[in-house]
Every structure is written in C-alpha cells, then in structure tokens.
Image (cartoon, rainbow, N blue to C red; front, side):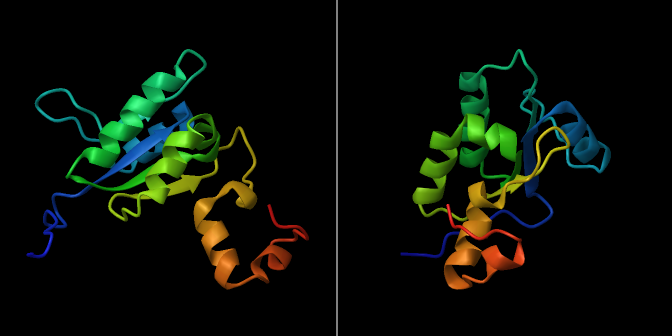
Length: 135
C-alpha cells in the first residue's frame, strides 16, 4: 500500500464556519476562495441558517481534498456537535478541526476537543485555566 499523498501546500485551503464578524475577518485575511463551480470554503451563519445546512457544509468541507483545516466557532460547533464529534472519532487528521471563540459567546475550554486532549495528557491544564472540575 502506497503513501497517501496530499496536495501541495500551495493548493491547500482553510475552511471557515462561523458568525458574520468571524468569517468576514478571515475573508479579509485572505482565507476565502470560490472555485469555478461556485463552491465556497466558508459559511456565514446567522439566525436564518438551519442546522442541516451547517452540517452539509461541514461534511462538504471535511470531504474536500483541498481543505487542510476547518475553523469553526464554538457556538456553531455546539449546534452541529454530533457531526463534529463524529468526524473527530473517525480518526482523520486532515482536515484538522479547530474550534475558535467568537465575540458573541465566551470561550469554554471544556467543550473544546483540542483542549480536552491537552488536559488528558496534562491534567494541570484545567487548574491553569482557573477551572477546578473536568467536564
């Protein structure tokens, strides 16, 4: 069995799912891309966005070969938690899913999968964040 090859680093993109301010900031930083077929690597979530649409975009981004990382606001990740946890449980590492805070909701490290992995190997991490109890 041969090695699985990734696209070159130049061709890899970052996907974004989040509120308007977060996604707009990322687009201004140069993350946004729309291909010739109109496929975007981002989704702006507002009060009219349905959970199903968020899940479809999430699954689309995780199955694309040109996406290396997906940034998703913690609030959006909570809305589609089953899909995010299902992807994490699959063992895939590319694209990597990172939950980021948004200005509407405070960051909760107990819900962050990356922080949970850190705390598993370094239990003092909860105390360092000012939290006494584990989730």
